Length: 110
Image 1 (cartoon, one colour):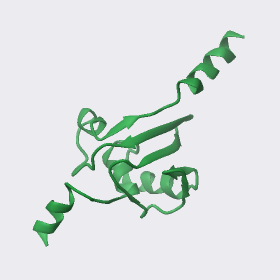
Image 2 (spheres, rainbow, N blue to C red; image 1 turned 90 degrees about the horizontal axis):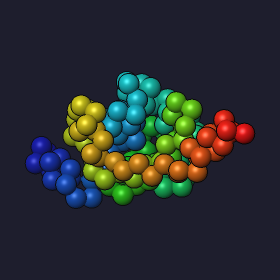
Image 3 (spheres, rainbow, N blue to C red; image 1 turned 135 degrees about the horizontal axis):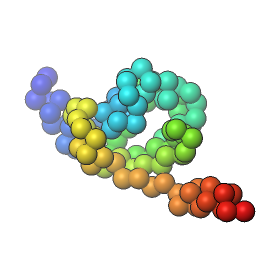
């Protein structure tokens, strides 16, 4: 079974949503990652998710509120562990909307 687990990490692999959020350092603990996933505010490929056990794959797009901002990220690779922040950042690409930052700047300027 260990051999099949390693093979699935490369192609066509899936990972629990809460585990990805924790490994990618969007949450400080797995229980916080589960709360983010189960809050009903997270979208996975445009679909509203309320289960922390939902599966993510390479290429999936996640959108969720985090620390007062909406984060939009595309999963580039599935992490094998919760590593340092620099390593975690290699597993996703931020697709955050520049317009949301512009709205905050315009509010302060006006």
